[in-house]
Length: 314
Image (cartoon, rainbow, N blue to C red; front, top):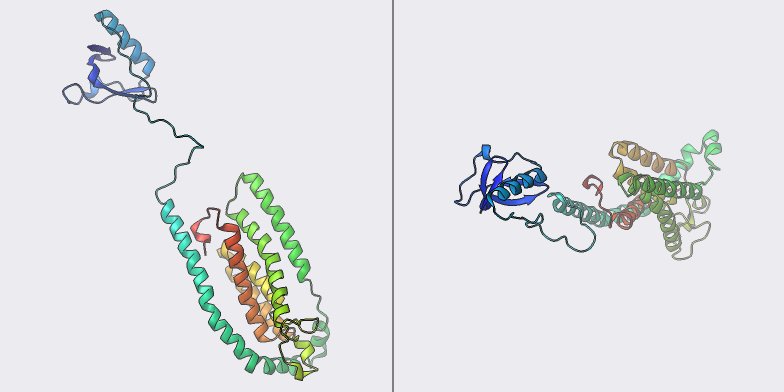
């Protein structure tokens, strides 16, 4: 059987497949490549070629040779279409999981030195530092007047950050039709703020350590009242340090350019809490570590089921 194409007579073996509305000629019946000048161009309209082929067969008195359009195509699998993944997707996912594990392992390893540093401060450093500040800084009437009645707006900060971050998360998801890195950052803030506030409240209840300003007039009460916290015994750990460290860690993760600002903010807050005799040194150290642990837990809760760029995986 012979066929007449756009450039002459072709055998049926010359037509190898029909796909995407174009006929591609590859080899003839003897396995030889068909010369380029005898091939239809790339993307040659299939309808035009078919008309010429059928017309040539009609002149030769032969039956048209039909080739199904989907002869070389596979049946589409049932179910929703699966988007193709880039070749490096598996490697990126593995790298992200590795970074998470290393970060969690680093926090776990840091528990021992943080516990030792806290214990050392409780035994040897807290009392001398608190007395030094009271003796020299509070000898100034101006310093005493400005720092004696600082407002405690921690709860208001938590409420504002949680509500604002939740609203920004919903707006970002609705606008982008999905969760991207900024939206995940807002979600992290909305989770980390109340989680840190709850964590500091529970830890204060467990340890029941006397506040620094309550201890100064009564040095004999330098004790931990386990599971018996009250208004006077709620100093360990520092709640401000827990909450602010958790929020700063979220910003640290999603905005690398802001890391120097986050570090400076935490150092300033730690010095301010100690210099105003609101907390002992050990309260601040434990609060900072607790904030990092809260942020890591929030990251697990918010980002484990969402694909995120590898650069924010730690």
